[in-house]
Length: 280
View (tube, one colour):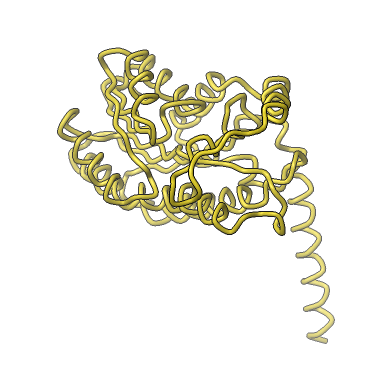
């Protein structure tokens, strides 16, 4: 499927994004590595080789994404696949969440996906019109499907619930166009997303470092329990190749989805009982 296609990956400089870039290239795609930090994007592009180029972009800034879109078309001639992968995370309960950080998460995780859809989907529609393959892929999370049992990540969970809605809405909107839509939902992955504040933009408070002791515990935990980014990328791309909308890359997510399904079913049963009683 991927041979000769041009893929754009936001947040491509590290973690799952880097793994997607490497795996896409291994499957024959040309890759535009897009990241807030041009140096990390460039490092991944060098790792991938001649089939990749690096671009600096803050996905929360529409004008920057518009510029990248034009540059990718200039450099590669077209865009077939878009991976809206850029994202940030913090851990906090609702009452402990800094309002500025809440805005940061929504601007990047939700606004960034929305911006990427609006700016790149027209390119994908154009490719379908030429008879080529086109697909838009969102990086969701286990947090898109339920409330994880790990540390409280309330604002992050809210953003990942939101991108599931965006992806499903885009799938409906594009149903008759030939442009496919997927969202893949990993569980814990061994990345440094827990340290997202290290690259936080100035308007949201600027970069900051975690206390060394906390950082060491967090890194140890994700290494012990997280899937490898490379494995997650392979599973995600396999699902995209099969044309799936919802791609789950960690079966342990059942621990949080089953209670959600049971609660919905129970609420529906109560609703039916109540309606039947009131209609008598």
